[in-house]
Image (cartoon, rainbow over all chains, first blue to last red; front, top):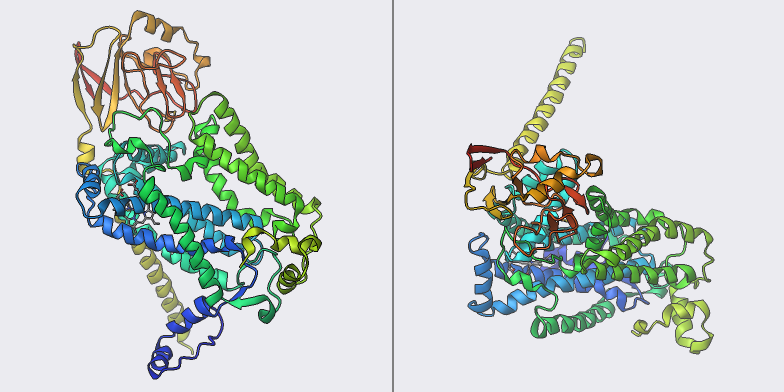
Length: 429
Length: 176
Ligand code: HEM
Ligand code: FES
């Protein structure tokens, strides 16, 4: 997206068009000819998967909106009507609801990919920060979408989450009433959430544009963490090499998605949401959707209301400053023997928090959640800064080309550090 | 150039003032867009309700709706009142004497919304779990309230809110 285009239209119409609106050149430079490191593994395909799911959510969402009624007296019934009466309504709704889950699964893999390979480091800090903003807007979108079916979990989830703001002194309660348009979650809340749920995905489209733009200035990172030194030796054009690799990954991911849609459409959901919202009865055990569970665990780990809310926001906020907390010069965990271990501990801690978020807030679960919450923050605020100072990284390959050639030439045993970088099973390609 | 001195400053001043007013006007015009999200007149109009207390026997509870939220009405037993009075105020996270919460000790009337994140605590129905302090228990994140609806344990910061109540007759009240 930056610099002079090398695109040369061949047809007369193409030339006429390009000199007036150089949009084909933009597509050519960013999606076809873009020089991409030749050693990207399958963990790099999740960007394409995410883009696919954003489009899919928008398409299924727009057709659902043709059948859905955002009013407290009809919302639940209209969703049931979608499920029973509307042609293929069940498919559209299951695709939209499970699509949201797959979207989050993909974004979590994408984020952990970034953490493992140090993709957030200079010169990609802004790219990373835009990514964190995308993640926040995604969460807001899914949260508002979840209110729309107006089930018990919809209602109580929205009640609890809008109440987060009541933790702030003085301004808290007015903010909560403003968000809800009433003293409790009600029709005004449902209406505005529908309006905003329709809007935010398009804001996401814009943010994704910025994300890709910021990506195309430094170019992709890669599994060695060594930057591209020679476009000729280290890169291949995006098309056909990565268009195909991405397409293959998208197809595989779609199999998982469609398996949920057709064989376990309610597995990731909550049964209580098939009971219509009742403002006078809280379900015995309220839990958010699975993708929010780790944050819910952090919230409940703190015995203080404001403290819990602040810590929960901070658990995402800390990602914004991560590029400056990590003091290591080496990007990829492949060459960071200590960080690599801490990375996998961190993955386990995050999954553990997710597990605890789904358990009742009592006894041993709370204690475990406290320990894991403390570790979560220690990982970013203590371990990351210190590791960079004390760790002795392995020797980096001279270049991407060298790393790739070493891998293909040597016998698997004799590789040393560079070989290890590229012997991960997912690098075949 | 002799006469420009003065006209230059006034032109520039004019630009500053014009820009400033333009910014202020824009800021003001955003307010209606924000304020429309606040509770509207019809929501605010629903803000008082009358309740007849006669059907409630000692030891029983009743739940009514006020401003969309449940109101817990409990006719407390002598035992429960005694328990509530016996607690030293320093033991309370949100110190409030029982007499400040129940104008007539027998009738405890509160908004049944947990002051943590807004769930409805259990304890109104017979057989409900009532927590460690024999009052109400919020299952969402484990807040325990005592027989005066005061927070004793758990993440909720404040006691269950006592709404504005007026006794119209011996057993008739207006809430709000
Ligand atoms: C970022 C993309 C999106 C995400 C993550 C998302 C997420 C969600 C979620 C989690 C639900 C609740 C599903 C359920 O349990 O039933 C939902 C419902 C809904 N969404 Fe979206 N959505 C997205 C985009 C859109 C768009 C662009 C529209 C267009 C208007 C839309 C329209 C709807 C409608 C009408 C419902 C209610 C029907 C139902 O509950 O299935 N969504 N959305
Ligand atoms: S809402 Fe009652 S304890 Fe959290």
